[in-house]
Image (cartoon, rainbow, N blue to C red; front, side, top):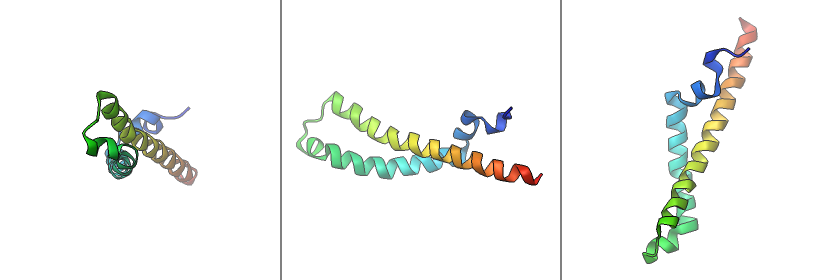
Length: 84
């Protein structure tokens, strides 16, 4: 049975994981937002729907980065555990 320290939520809310995911989401989200919505933003035709899509554009890389970090932390914990 996994202990509390290896639960997905516990690892995903660690400061290092959140900060890393936020940095990645900022860079990747900005690039994707410009690629996908730049013309709409420049023309001033952004609607509420456009802004919702832009928010999702930032949330997707945040989620992917968080998920990847949790898997990496768990893998490292499993590698260290047999050494105990």
